[in-house]
Amino acid sequence: MSDVHIFHPTVLREYDIRGIVGETLTPADARAVGRAFGTMVARGGGKTVCVGYDGRLSSPDLEAALVDGLVACGLHVLRIGLGPTPMLYFATRDREAAAGVMITGSHNPPEYNGIKMMLGKGPVYGQQILDIGAIAAKADYASGQGSSEQVDVKDAYVERLLKDYDGVRDLKVVWDAGNGATGEILRRLTARLPGTHIRLFDEIDGTFPNHHPDPTVERNLVDLKKAVAEHGCDIGIGFDGDGDRIGAIDHQGRVVWGDQLVAIYASDVLKSHPGATIIADVKASQTLFDEIARQGGKPLMWKTGHSLLKAKMAEVGSPLAGEMSGHIFFADKWYGFDDALYCAVRLIGLVSKLGVTLADLRDRLPPVVNTPETRFQVSEERKFQVVQEVKERLTAAGATVNAIDGVRVSTPDGWWLLRASNTQDVLVARAESGTPEGLERLKAMVVEQLENSGLPAPSFEDGGSAH
Image (cartoon, rainbow, N blue to C red; front, side, top):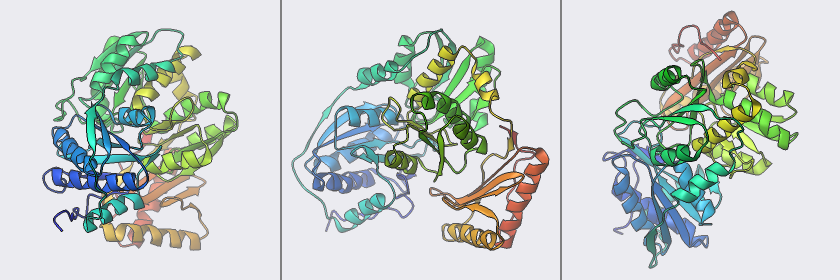
């Protein structure tokens, strides 16, 4: 059968579809995704799918091929055009579409691209992504006479972002779009937000000529820190390539990391949702979980991955969740998806109405020292085995282990984590302590466990970082 399609074995990931354009991901792959995912939508009774794309050079061709595949399933496609991933999520909810598809390489290098999907109100991940591959491999497609139209949701999206701004005093804010897909929306948003707004790199350019758009890596925040200092700004905000992850800088030029932001948001959200469950991933600081409990909330540690957190939020009715990586999800007043522009509006409003600085809110959290995420290569076949071996040894030794996603080990010095990445052939290690000496002991425990599994020791960055 001519329509049978086999994807490169590396592109069907846990949370999305992703590859190197022209090598492992082509327009033919995008069309096959359109046919296979469109089949899932059509057979589930869906009629309409929203489709958007980011600013990468390869995105328009992939979008066109994907739309072709969806239309061949008999679906009506609303093409929302170029913009951030959360705008696609918003359009899917606002237009009450059965599904949404975003062509985006997220924060990956320029040669990459990918496809994120939602079905109904929830993310598509795990087995559903494998099902797409299985449908394409059999060419077991729904067929029909579909159609497509261009729709503009930008004004409606900006209007909705502004709706929840609750600030009372003007702030000076610098924004770094990193030449990513947020650029045009950011211009429209800042034109209407109160206060003074300085924008960096808001021209959408898929070559990312100024710096890589990943706000979780401190070297990508150099321009933002410099602008905060030069202009005397209250806050600096940075985005990743497709606008679903936020980075923040306080007026002193310090990074406010994703888990610290969740702690700051939690203090506000718990006022209107007392006793609510607030979720964070296994990489988050213990100070976040302690802070949620201190504020009267129920902290829940969950698996890393934006799709997994979104699904868990819906399951337990959580108003707020977040990841160390800057994916932060509001169901309080919002839709439960990760939107860095919305998170920025909420952060500015919170600082404005509290009459304090972001630095003040950051410094209310107990100081700890921790390592950055340390990644080291292990084969796909071996990475999960190593984690299992470590878990078995630690459990036999009577250690305090949370095995929800890898192993997170608590000791009197603090905690350390070892988990297998769902998106790369790497293991991820992290450690956090109240003292530098404690951190060294925790790092030594990680090294010992890896050596016991026959792996070379990871090279943690010297000393860890204050957090």
